[in-house]
Image 1 (tube, helix red, strand yellow):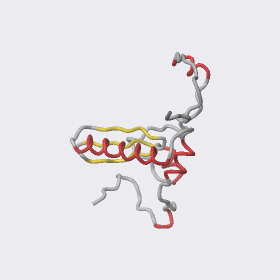
Image 2: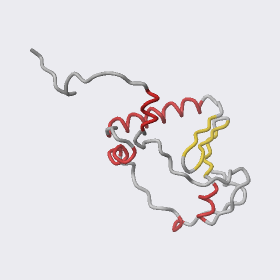
Image 3: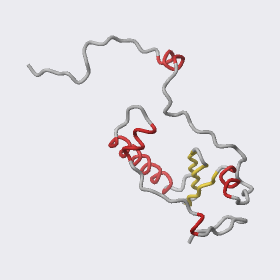
Length: 135
């Protein structure tokens, strides 16, 4: 059974947002410059499996996400939204929630010149990728 946080109210069905199944092609296009649908699917599946394995051991786990934190203690998962989500929904803010504002990540932004310089890559192109001959 789910335990509601102290001070929160039950939400009516009209308060729920419509959901849709995750489209891996859309996610790959929207959140990266080069990932394919299969890479997105495999990466998320691997992440989910590894996260589940660690959580099942009873270790404390905390995963920061854009709208909150996934926390697991003693095999009990919980998701704590950032304060702005509670404010926007008209819900009281639980005392253990940090009052931080949502900031979209720049994880998949194109690298800038200083980022590329730090990589110190050197090389030369010898031909077009994907062309191979089997003579």
